[in-house]
Picture 1 (tube, rainbow, N blue to C red):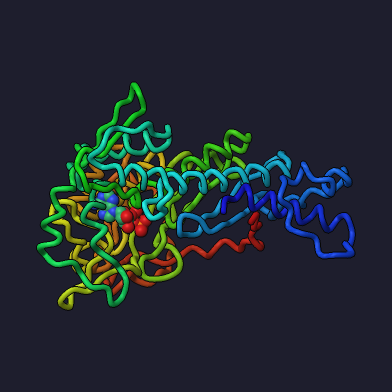
Picture 2 (tube, rainbow, N blue to C red):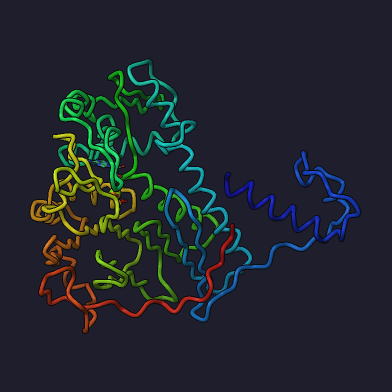
Length: 396
Ligand code: ADP
Ligand code: MG
């Protein structure tokens, strides 16, 4: 159900309550709320209360979307909390809209329709799907195919949960020819696109969440709220400042709660990928849920990073590059990031070593008394105290 319809229903319920007790059970309304006599009968029905503003001048909201928890932390300043509530509702509705377009799991999504039409004639795409596919292709090219959303042609054979059965090597080999980002054909003049090979499939799990974060931030800005953080499942975009000072974003520890270090940030994306609960065991080895597009096999957990944090100008890029760096592996991934400004990275290796890209290192704020990450005798320290946040505003 979309946020918008949910919100309308919530307001509708309020209107009914405002009219006083009804003698008989009221049938569910079939028309839109404003078209019903009940709604018209009470022109002064109360609006939902504005979200609470915390002591530091921010409003905090969270909602479960795209299979993960999203949060918005917005600095209200002199603006109206009620207007901020409206902006937050709109931003969350935008994430829902993006999910409806880009989820490869929802059979009705535009992406599923594109996947189902692989090998057939081109289709007119929404500007959003076109943009994400176009940016995906640029990042595929830039990372020499380490990031490649056509991984899904073979990726759909894999299931990452305890007890899952791996596909046979033959099955993987048979689908590997479907993995090739060059076969995503896009025409910028007509906004039409197609997947050129029958059976090929695109999965946007490594980029759509970042795009959703960016879109939500854009909607907040369009409502006049320039200062905020939008976060969804480890993908963060930081806009403006908090009362004039840069926001601080903690880099989540891969092995538990708290942060490795904090990054002061403004108008920048910080995306952390890893700390995976989702894996599959094959012959006693664990594999994480990122697929190496060259082999069709997931990454061997023992040689991949525990977590990868990538900074970029927006969350769409940071999300996709974090996955590319995972495929490259810690050393090559760090070298890649250092050669490609404005990317920056913090990589926690399997042994707990914390690798930081050259230009980012001086900006990090390390807490003084941290336990080591994983089993390493790391010199890096613990979490800044969690923000003593008030009860989140739950718009849904
Ligand atoms: P998470 O968001 O879970 O921390 P990522 O952002 O790295 O992790 O995204 C992982 C998801 O990306 C996978 O679940 C899958 O949908 C997709 N994916 C896996 N391998 C690739 C790849 N090589 N290129 C692009 N997308 C991938
Ligand atoms: Mg990603």
